[in-house]
Image (cartoon, rainbow, N blue to C red; front, side, top):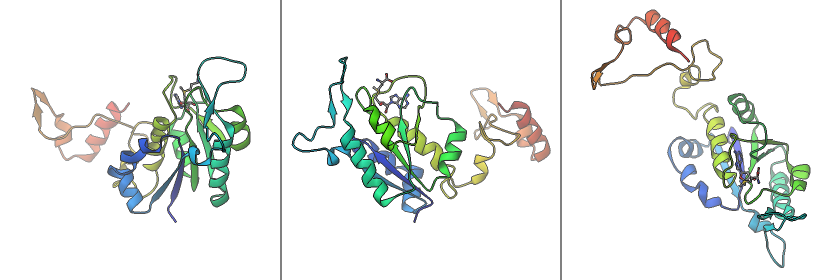
Length: 216
Ligand code: SAM
C-alpha cells in the first residue's frame, strides 16, 4: 500500500503519460511511495451512444460533460477505495494554495476529476464531489494540467518523494522563519556577477543571517 494514492478521472488519459513516467513522480511511483490510477469516463459511458458530452439545457455555446459517465466512474473508484477524497478542478472554485497541498497530501487517497468542454453537469458535483479547487483565475482547456499541478505540489510533501526533506522547510510558503532566499552555485563569477562573499565563508551563523535578510 503506497503512502498516497491518486485516482485521476480524465477523458484524455494520455496527457499524463510523461508526467507519470518522468523524474521524481516516476521514482515515487517505482518506490511505491505514491500510486496513481487513471480512469477514462468513456469506459463508463452509457449505451447505445456512449457519449460523454451533450449540448446544454437552456441553450448556449459548447458542450457539457454528461453526468452518467462521470458518476459511474467515481462510483467504480469508491467501490474499491471507499475513503477517497474527490476533488473537482474548476476555474471558479477557491484557489489551490500551499496549505491545501499540505492538507490534501494527508488524505490516504485522493481522486482528481478533470472537466473538459464548458464543464461538467452540476449533478456530478452534488452527487460525487467533496470539494472543488481552481489553480488560478484563468481558463484552461481542461482539468488535466490543474490536476498535475495539484499532484506535484502534494506529492513533494509526502515523505520519501523529495530526496532531502530539509528542502521543504526553507522555501516559499513554508512556515519556517527562513523561507525562500536567493540561491547560487558554481561558477563563483558569472558574467561579472560575484557570489556574495558570506556564502563562501563557511560561517553558518552569518549565512543564516544573510539568508534571513534576503528571504522573501
Ligand atoms: N465554462 C467554464 C467556466 O467558464 O468556468 C470553463 C470550462 S474549462 C474550458 C474546462 C475545464 O477545464 C473545467 O471544467 C475545469 O475542469 C478545467 N479548468 C480550466 N481552467 C481551470 C483552472 N484555472 N483551475 C482548475 N480547473 C480548470
